[in-house]
Amino acid sequence: MKCKFEKKIGAFLDNELQKEDFAQVKEHLKSCLICQQTLRELNSINIFFENYTDVEVPEYLNQRILSKINSSVSKFKKNIINFAVAASIAFAFFSGLFASNQTFTQNRENTEQIAFGTESFYSYLDWEE
Amino acid sequence: MDKIEFELFLRKENKKIYNYLLKILRNSEDAEDVMQDVFISFYKKVDSVKPIAYESYLFRTAYHKALNFIKKNKKKKSIMFEMNEMDHYAVNEDKANSNNNDIVHRAMQNLSLKDATIIELKYFQKKNYSEIAEILSITSSAVDSKLVRARRKLKKIISQEFSRKPVFENRGVR
Image (cartoon, rainbow over all chains, first blue to last red; front, side, top):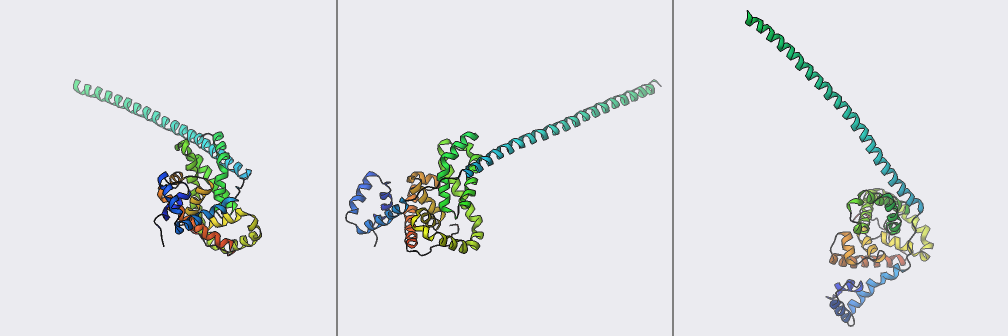
C-alpha cells in the first residue's frame, strides 16, 4: 500500500519542505501508519552515523601534497627558463639568417648594378659606334 | 592562489576530503593517492574558480577523481577482491563492534559511488538539498528522491552487516 504523502517524508525529515507543506505532512503523520513507518526507516540511519569519528589526516600526506605542488611550480619555472633559452637561440639564429640574407640581397643588387653599369657602358659604346 | 594560501586551504579542507575518500575507497593507501591527485588538480585549476565556489569545486573534483580511480582499478579489484575482503573481514571482525567507523566504511563501500556521495554530503558534510544539487549538478528534487533511495539501500546494508552476514559485493561503477 502506498500513500501520496510518502514521497515528502524524506524532505520532511531533512527540514527541506516549505512551511505549509511541513505543517501538512506533520498533521498527516499523526494518522498515517505507512508514512510513520517510512519516517522511522529513513530516520534510523542517523543512529548509525552518530558514533562516527573523523580520522585525522596524516601529516606526511599533507607534506607529500605540498612538495608535489612545489615541484610542479619549479618544474613550471624550469619550463619557462627552457622556453626562454630556446626562444633566444631561435631568435639569434633567425636574426643571423635574416642578416645574411640581407647582405646576400644587397651584394646581388650591387652585382646587378655593376652588371647593368657594364652593360650600359657597352651599349653606350655600341651606340657610339 | 599562491602556495601559502593553498597550504592554508589544504589544512582547512583536507580532513573532510580524506574522510570522504576513506569511506568510499577500499583502503587508506587508495584514499591517500586519490587525495593527493584531488588537491594537485584543484591547485592547477583553482584560478578559474570563484573563491566562493572553492569548497564545492573541491568536493566535485574528489568525486570525479574517486570515480576515475574506481573505473581504473575495477579490473584489478575484481581479481583481488574476494581474498582481500575476506581478510579484511576476518581481521576486523572483533574490532567491528567497538569501531563504528569500520562498519560505516564497509556499509558506504557497498553503496554505489553516487549514493555514497549523496549520503556523505547530507550526513557528514551537513549540506542542504540545494548545496548537494550544486555539487552533483542535479536538481534539488532529484536530491530528494536519490537521498531517499540511498538511505533505504544503506538501511538494508546495515541490517545485513549487523546480522553478521558478509555483504561484500564487487562494486563496479554505476
